[in-house]
Length: 80
Image 1 (cartoon, rainbow, N blue to C red):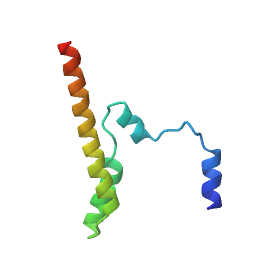
Image 2: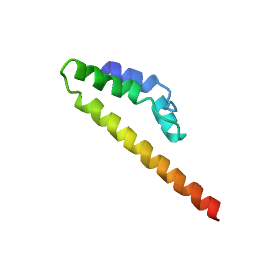
Image 3: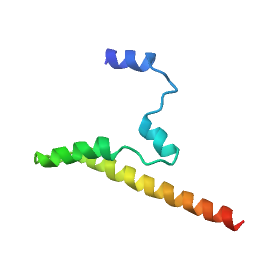
């Protein structure tokens, strides 16, 4: 616990993970290369990595919703 506190208190409070940066800028995230990879590796060893499966699916859903919202905004702006 002390190590976690030390890292959290000395880290850069403005740091944003790369996946967050990609998502917020409308770019594809690396979720397949991180969480998806762990989920696939688990399946190869007859293990189900529920959390990594969930995170991968949820990120893909969030990307899809984000992209559809962006498309709707673009079509509304074009119509105006």
